[in-house]
Image 1 (cartoon, one colour):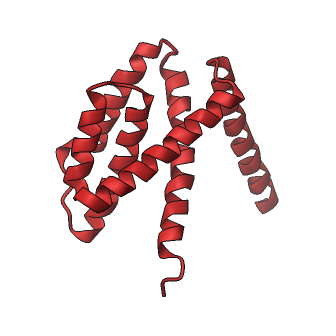
Image 2: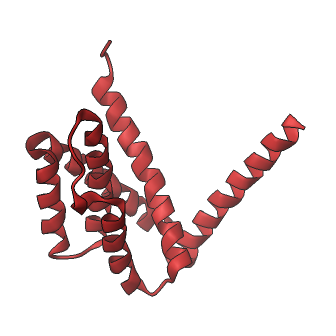
Length: 150
């Protein structure tokens, strides 16, 4: 019985990954463009961390707000990365401002993605793929930051 659960879980993960891959391909995103997106997500994470180190959450708010004045995909990545960092800052006692509430960030993202004409399902799959890259990147940054710490 336990073996069957692991097999089913593995199949579910494989189906999910296949659907993301197909969504990216069906959306016209070639492997080169997917690598470009991953690079932009990594840059957004790195930029957000730098801004946070220099200006805290208010610096993140300013950076994201400034970016959205000339909207582009990078602003979406910067917004999502900054949101995660701002949420993480709440564990140190910093209050989460309304600008980085999940609903606010999601609304800015949905507004931007609505213009691409791909539809809600494709946009959701795209955001899921972006989220996976962002998770790996943030974890890698965290691990480098704490490497050698007790």
